[in-house]
Amino acid sequence: MSKIEVDAIDKQSGSTLTIGGSGTTVQLGTGASQTGFGRTGTVDWQTTAKTATFTAASGEGYFCNTTSGGFEVDLPAGTPGAIVSVQDYNNTFDTGNLTIDPNGSQKINGGDAGKELTLSTEGQGLTLVYVDDTVGWRSVHSDDFSEVPLNPTYITATGGTITTVDTNFKVHTFTGPGTFTVCSTGNPVGSDTVSYMVIGGGGGGGRGTGPSDRAGGGGAGGFRESRAASDSYTASPLNATSGPFYNLPVTAQGYPITIGAGGATVGSGGTCGNNGTNSTFSTIIATAGGGGGANSTVGKAGGSGGGGGGGNSAGVSGGAGNTPPVSPPQGQSGGTGGLGSPNIGGGGGGGATVAGSDASGGGGNGGTGATTSINGTPTERAGGGGGDKCASASGGGSATACTAATANTGGGGVGGYPGGGGGDGMQGGSGIVIIRYKFQN
Image (cartoon, rainbow, N blue to C red):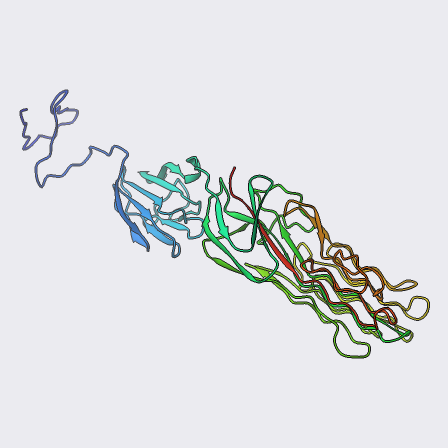
């Protein structure tokens, strides 16, 4: 193949210089430079990822890693045909934005002079070509990883009692303290978020001591639930469908699980029941149920409030539910204790979905709990304890008179009734945590 050397060319208006023909390669000599040839629309990609603010060079593409925080790309002074590309290095532009800053008063996509452009879409990439001073840098190509079909991957985890329900879902049930350990996180096409139900320990019933001293029922432990977007079981009315507690993401780590204990009645004479204790998973806290009041004492506040105590001298209100407040509410208030015969009874403890009943011709009934099928079977939990009803059914689904609320239901304990168990109120039921996720399709 012959080589043609051109040392100098006279500049003549309208003249044309043709070098080579079909199959001929035109090569610039060592040390030579070119102008006016233009680019092919491609860039030379720099494979060392950028992690902090830098100035781009025309003709180069950059992988930008914003894992540790967003930063800025300063564009070079634009001349017609200049080209720069950037690409999200590891799908973090949504949490660490990349800002593109034009040189001086130059524009991007015909916008305001000197105005920056922010890339905030996960996996996004962008190519910019400088056109002229009117439009400035023009985006000629944009992409993000969502445009590329992903193979589904799924959460894998250990901890608690593990069962398979509804064919494609794993359920981890914790009835005592433990750790939910996420081994792999999956992706949005498979699963990367979990459904959960967290219930705090129920409050204990108050202690009644005589005909004029009647005790309120304990409030149920707070009831927190949210069904993940990838799930479809029948959730309770308290299912969170928006906000920070919905579609809860998980990462590969261990999540300590706390199971709240049920509150008890202590002391002698007309005494209030104790609050239970909280249950927790990740950022979710289900507050303990409030203890039932006694001897005209206000029921205690909690996830659901304890019923107010009744007496001849005064009847008092139940404790407030949903304390501290969350949305949807984690429980309801306790009922009011009765003042004098025939309504001298204690108020019912609040339940997850219905407030405790006021005393009327005797102690008030505990409020209704919430029913969910998160474990594959519709189950009601977190019912309030009845006021002044030791000889009646206790909260949390137990049908045995004068016994503690059923364990791992978060039910409130019944209030004591003098002569029907010595006046002692019953202990609230312990809490529970259930976590569910898709593990196959």
